[in-house]
Amino acid sequence: MKIIVLNVNGIRSANNKGLFDWLKTQNADIICLQEIKANFDDIPKDLINWNGYFSEFHPAQKKGYSGVAIYSKNKPIRVIVGLGNQEIDDEGRYLQFDYNNFSVISIYMPSGSSGPEKQEKKFRFMDFYKPILEKKAKSNHEYIICGDLNIAHTELDLKNWKGNLKNSGFLPEERQWFSDILNYGLTDAWRNLYPENPGYTWWSNRGQAYIKDVGWRIDYQICTPNIAKKIISASIFKDIKFSDHAPLIIDYAI
Image 1 (tube, rainbow, N blue to C red):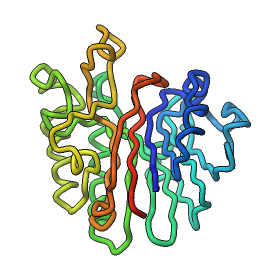
Image 2 (image 1 turned 180 degrees about the vertical axis):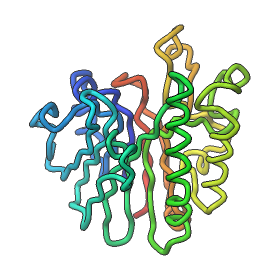
Image 3 (image 1 turned 90 degrees about the vertical axis):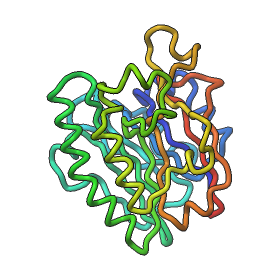
């Protein structure tokens, strides 16, 4: 089973840059998108149930902001939209597809980089979602959590880590939160397969960061233990720039 996760920074923009043409070549089983920046009326009609996939979208109430989506070859037995938290759900940050043996989640955690108020919102999200992750990790059901978490976990996960020790995305509290969820028994799929490969997935638009590969790894696929044993391969696609993020592609023996 192939799963692709990508923060598209606008589904219409990414489509115009050839994302969905490229996705046709990938034959992925599940595609999880974040930051679609489109409400239902603005999503191009040819991207709804695109290419025979079953799709669901969770837009933000604010126009042109946030939002997540999932495309799946197989129709899920249940779709869960939102986390039951108004602040989170109004911003379209969570979507879950349940299948018989596992679930896939598309999640977009807030960024706190634009100021203290945004950082506090991020901390509220983290505090609310952490016990949910603990419960998932300890359940008998299998999960693959895909998305932009807006956290670089370790020094390996961003190029200029020394200059970002006090910046959102690499704060001690954020990194500890990430360590805690892994300690529940969850697995960071990329890092499990590649313990030494940075695997950057996001680059600032400033200072030729993309060309110089001065990046951050903030996009993840995180899975429960039995699925972690079935990780076959992982890659990050950079040949075409659809967004300021790059697609993370992971194959599982499922």
